[in-house]
Length: 291
Image (cartoon, rainbow, N blue to C red; front, side, top):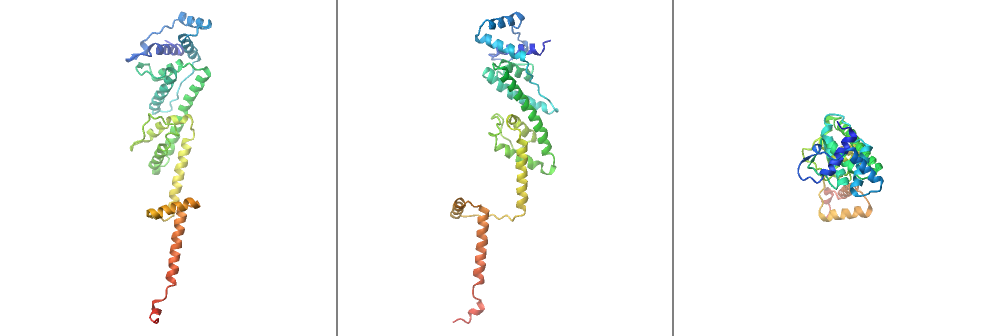
């Protein structure tokens, strides 16, 4: 039974040996050369100044496996398993791009987490960089789980506005996909989008943005406040011809005024002027005495 260090050595060296495989290949059935004499010879050669790519790569793997950086992910509830699979798939691809210029999906590991660790241990980066990278990955997962719990709680806090919250959240995300760093591989929402799809879409945004839920809630509160304000106002749709519309826009830009205020003032002044003109007209009864 291999311990964690031996497993990581085994998987990382197997990854190097089998990386060029062009057909489905089970990593667990491969036996890389990992006896003590071989490992000792690599370390001895390195001490003597041998710096060829093969020796450097082997030394890097030995050092990385010895560092034993944990890439463990907390599972809070049963539904987290599907999220974790998606999460690990994404990061395995990212790390494979850094360590091997791409992932070979023909290689079949015991599980996705061992595959992630194998690519991670092949990375020829400093111990500090690897530590920081592993920390970022783990923190992103923790933030995702926290966001998931809080987002579900907020959406379901009131049955009456659950659909409105979902619709607003979808519009918010779709308008900010680039800013939220949503991977292009994640498709845009469909009409039947559910709560789970929204949560998974935002999964990788938590690397740099910890305030997503707060921002969404503020946007929703702003929308609700606007609806309440507008309930107290009489809505009037006005259709303007092209010339009038152009004149209005030019006036607003020139004087820095608000459209609603200008239109309201114009209507009031027009009505007041009409009333004054009507009140100053002669009485029809008096007209019959004028010759």
